[in-house]
Length: 565
Image (cartoon, rainbow, N blue to C red; front, side, top):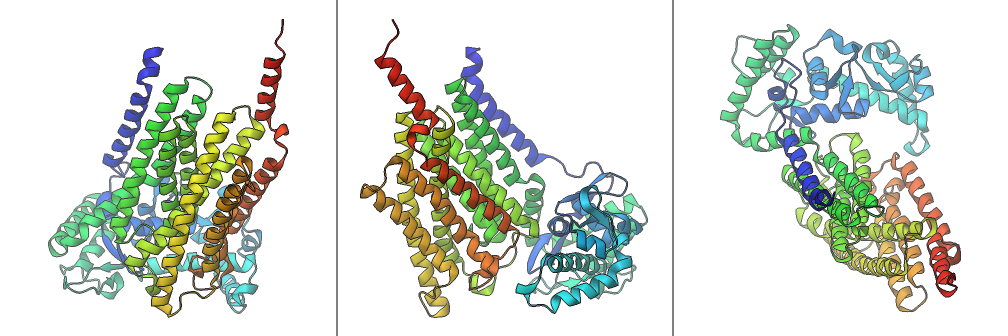
């Protein structure tokens, strides 16, 4: 048993490393006789970005069915590229595929459909009521956006999903034909060429491939895909390094893998407080390092694919917040060596990746940026620095949250751990104050260069200042003796609310220069997060005598002062 405890950290770390390595080299789409792997590498242009067909398929299916795969009408699970190929080839079965997710009762009533398990419906079920949907959408569009109710939003959403279908089936999107002149950037849709199967052109290579699939000619399809890729490798060789990497990135899903390792590290560290303490603590730390490795590879791969700094939109800001929080948590664990830093890194990193996963459900997360934001220097300075402030603020807040919950609900919080965590919260808040302040000032300089004014009282600007002020309040309250260990924890938990509002809340206002990140889906999550933190603040405000940990300490003192004879 002692031998197992000794080598357990090494064994678990190697298993995690091998698991990730196998995911990197695994062969995709082995269940199909069609060469979907080659087909999914076809380059296309969509929303201003050259991407593999695999990304286009995944992102658009995600918009429609909220998943990157689907269950066909025969009950078989299929990848997104299969769905796209069925549409592009004009397969009759595409009308039977239940991929449209419709949950709202009024929208179902409008389409004369009944609720079913999974809430998935096919194109064939929607088309008979298409005109009724159009009429409802026209009525919804006549209303000001602020006056639209949930029914209006959901009917417009369904209409947009059907538009995606129409555009793909009519070959309007994506732009599939790369420029004949390698120095040109003019891509063309497939429908812009005549369907002359006797001519040797990229368009006809496409048509032959799709025709072979429609005719169930496996050999013809596979030969066509390979020939097309070989031809493009000769005429447009610069396209493929990023295309192949992005396809592998999609297949591996490294951010999801990082989430798995973070959960495993959390569980191991938690169990380490119950038994096999040192062995499980080291095991958790080793798994956390593997998780950070995967996280880092994913982040920098994404930066390479986009050609941008790490933070360009709300999705990437969540990714970066999680990455910074994991690094800081590892630093805390390096000094404390008691599993607390591992738990904080795992919780904060996982929550940030979970937020990113929900934000990524709207489609392409590597989309082209708005012109006013399309500046790598300021993205690498102002936005990145502010986001580091977000990460530190959240980490401090989560440390305060865990400290309070440990103290109130368990007997694990002794005086030594109480002092250590409180000191770590203080140091993390100081880090957050520095980066939030510097990032906000850099944002003002960027605004002055872009719009001719340093400060405009924009909601996002105000939110950034509120974070700086809140963190400064925490530091000054501690310096001035207004709060002590418990008080700094409570204020740090309040910082979670302040930071979440600045990060997401102001975007949901739909006003100001920073309303580009608007998302109504975040409202429920933000409300729940605020209520959770308010509950923790309430629990932490209870007298310390009612905390289980301090009751246990008091009981031990009584026993020590009155020993049994």
